[in-house]
Length: 335
Image 1 (cartoon, helix red, strand yellow):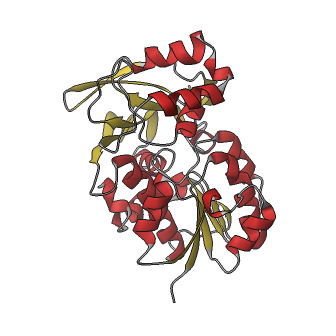
Image 2 (cartoon, helix red, strand yellow):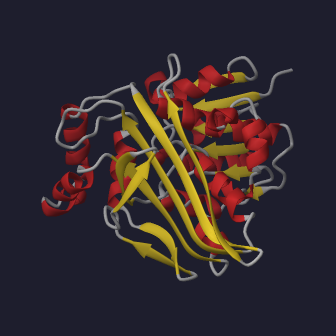
């Protein structure tokens, strides 16, 4: 008998999750357009009855309710959120099952990969996690088209980023810390955004010297975002920003995801670096951001239901085996 899985949210990512899981699991899909109010504990509880796990693929604002109900019911909970406050709330819950927030691309797969590389070193000086979901072709001044949640994009551009600096946890401003990256001969820029470190700063404080997450964009993007968010102070009115982006910035499914992890440290007393870098293209009906995000959470769900993720309560991304993740039929997209 197939395991019963609830998916709340049927947008671009929810749709992709459903397509990937439909042959292996008995799925139940819920969305606001179908009449499900995911902020109502009563409605969420009714929706989840009889299920083994739920994936929240809706806006990050609904995750607290879904997580609380799942914890109370003792069923597995997984989400995709990059919102730090939401994850902090999930950490406070007690459950007889698992609570696995931040299961997408970044946070998500990027943290599992980084943790794997860290384990190969005796001493770690630098952990650099860099991810970008980029349009393959752009003609506008901001060098960017929308390929995922506008709400999530604005959230990570507005909130402070967690880092480890000289062994201690710290916070840095979003849209700052700009650096130049060259990957396979092509230039990019990367800058601070929130959420991508997941719980790694808690896990590795005092164990690594420096750990950062930054978003990759084409050169010039950051300057335009700083003008909108900071100079015009639109970060104080996110609704205006969201409406502006949704109305005036084109959407694209012709995208590419750049997935980049570099760790620098000592192995047997010798300073070395190890890098894991992939460019992941759109595949068939799936855009690159859809397939990478959906594959992340589907792989973790699969590993959990195969009993390869053990324990109860909060499960961090960095505690998940990268080798198991890559062997999984969903996670192999990251090979």
